[in-house]
Length: 302
Length: 329
Image (tube, each protein chain N blue to C red):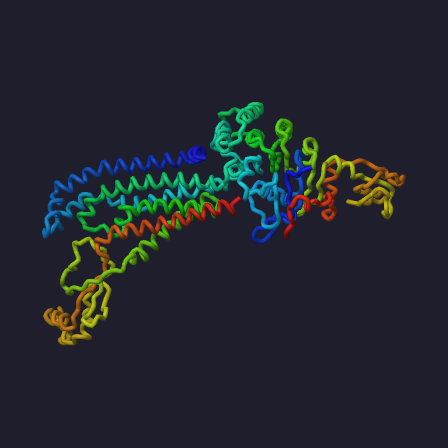
């Protein structure tokens, strides 16, 4: 398994505060990773450091084996759709495609045109008059036409209505299937992500809290319910993430390391949204793979 | 990248070209009239004859075209507009609208992005400013010859090579301020302010010292022996025989004089005893001293001033490029 993205001890300090601090994560190649976290967790800052738009104050970052910002050879390999989907308002859609062609050596103009046309967007229309959904489609077409190895999207769904959201995700999935890219998609709309993502990173208070393949994460977490009691050790439970009590009932959100056969508990599988919310509610709980920074050659610096 | 630069800035460039064309037509239309009346009024011939007093012809000539005075403030402001409308939005609008996140994540590095934009707009600025400066120099030549004054403020600044330096500097200030401020309208205002301040400082405090000024002394009632040579007179002082400066300018202060020559006011007469005053002036050696830059230093001064502004421009543009590469996002 090779990693498309490695961050080690990554931090960004503005004058008087840290927008992101001590963030370490690793996204394997070929995954569609959801980057989830509350507002202000540093998702945008992290993505900007990945694209090279921002320079880290601390730590190191490597994309496809290159250092963003310093290695100009990286740019052709990444596609980026920034938050709020910036476009040149006075440019027509066709001019945006021309912009893409002129600004990129590797450029699949047919793909861009096909994507825009499939979304039913008029090439002669000015970008300033496009709807949010159409703008996002144009931006996605631009990013995909670079044929990037890594596609980074910063809250592309935030301003879209449910229908536009579905169409955007559909277009994204088609693009990913065709291109086989690694994708990092930040969002706080967890329900939408569940359909397209297979890898999850939860960023909270500027730290990585959860990281792993969604299948593994869902497989290793359970909700236990039973009559109210003091909780002791339960066989098969590696850690209790969240513990809630009502007058008569106790509910545990746990990470497991084996099957749970204790008849005192009824065991339920968890959904992605429950998992994310449980961890975000308990900022000290973590579910992280064992660090393997040593064999990537990346040193952790503070 | 050239395509993008043109697509993004074509409106500004076309408006600039239209303004330039309008001003050029105005200068051409009026310029030939000025040149021909310079000859037909006999002023050209008079000035060409050594020793002739052309004050009257010259005054008539100037009066005839006094309606064109408005061009001086117009041309003084023109370079600043380059900074405001071309320079300030170059980076600021991009960052303000967030499109830098689109532009800087394509295959082109942002170093190339900023270099291409600055080079293209810089070249357009140089070309436009050079054309206009040349035309203005030609157009205003009769006035300059009539008044024998290329050095005074509002004349020096509009002719020769300095306008090209000003225009480039204005562009550079705009780009730098826009890069630092990142918001278009405040950047435009700050550009205008910074440009005016720097121009003012150089004009009033630095330009007079580009070369050591010379001093000339002459009799209190005499005329400056340097007059008519196109010199830039920086200051005139009234000085006594011992070298004490009594006043700035040509001032006959009777009170001051009466301390030195009590006989002037002894009898309390009015008007004063002219002979006594004359005698006093002779006795204490009252005379005038002027510091000046000789007229033949004109092109040296033009060169130095242009070089100062070009150097400032290069510094500011380098700062902008560095800032775009390292700091903005």
